Image (cartoon, rainbow, N blue to C red):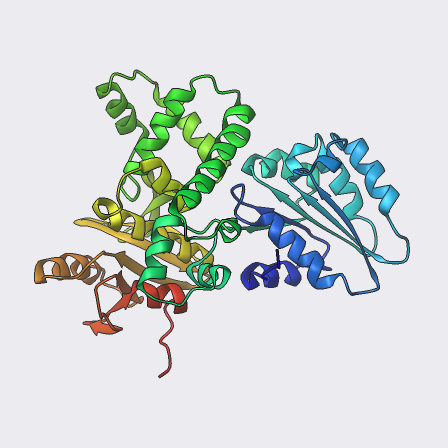
Length: 406
């Protein structure tokens, strides 16, 4: 399969080469970390001054590398003095005590190390201490809408956006194709089962798999809603499941460690501080969310759109919080360096009542930071309502907040 460069990540990786940092690609399994690693090799392999040592722990030929001593032996065997050695290790968490090797080879002259991992625990505070703090993390997400169009050779139209909303952006769908819906869902289901088994059930020795699936279905049904562990526990008890708050917190952390779920804290806009209780939960890929939730998309389209907008805001480099007002809530408060902006997400602005609700929450914020409403309202064009900009979803996914020149 011909590699398609994902420019966002290629640029980020290239920017950190030669800076003495271990480059760590993190993210959910099957979002394309291995792809980015292979693309890096492909783009630089013609440089005669480089030597690549590539280890992919998902391939059988590397099964023998189980610990740091075996990893050292393999690297030493393929090391070339006098060249710039690139050490590329895919799914590094499968190698016991890998951090000892990485820390050691980082000190070698003319050496760069790029590793991938599907579990956030590989970058725990203890592990960071072992590495020496000399790493740069790049969080890899599933395909953006623009990448989705590129990978599947689609025109930008309503049908393409509908497929993206329905199937999500797992890069492996390129090989499956989008023509046969049964094949698409079979692939997404296979990815889900792999993530659940390898990165959640086996890694955490979970016995109550039934409750694990029930809890995940609950999160799939309630994306975009503020929730607390106490409220989740009460709901589960109402369904005849007596599970402690502590257990729910542990399971939620397992989902987050595998990057299957993402949590967003609340931000007190008036008090200018993060609030400690309640948070929103989103999925790393909406295709997986839709698989878990089942059914048609019409009834929960607004929640899915909110998830997609959140993902795109993170891609754009924003730190994202939920905006808390005294009289209500704003979907997202987005910050980057000294920049701040507010975003409200709606499906359709089809009545004065809906317009007042969606725009009104932003009108209540009495500062001069940019404010946006993003919706799928048909024929919507970029417009300004008393300082609040209305953007169509497709325009936002293609151009961000920039105003496209005519």
